[in-house]
Image (cartoon, rainbow, N blue to C red; front, top):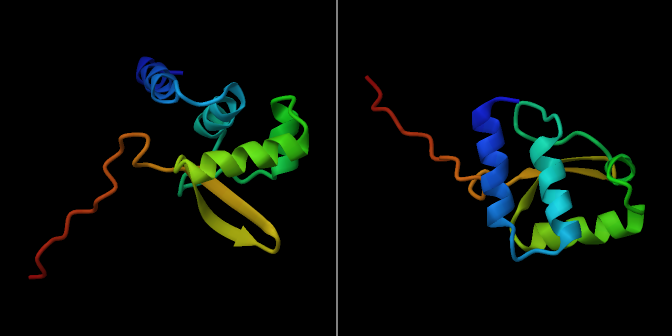
Length: 103
């Protein structure tokens, strides 16, 4: 992990100070877990819950709270499984794509 990555993770911890421990754990899990090109974590809630030692219902309820707080956004739905990513705006990323004049 690079020094920049560590700094981003520390900043993320600072931004989540007002959240519960479980909510912060879910945010950090999404920040640290491997993602696809869109930033989505392509893992089921059951597997993510197991990874952090949380009961699946507790993980799902906590993730719902994190979504409602604006930290996660749905990226896609395959069948009944929904996939999420950290909201880039919460991460301080510039999500505006500059337009270029057509020539």
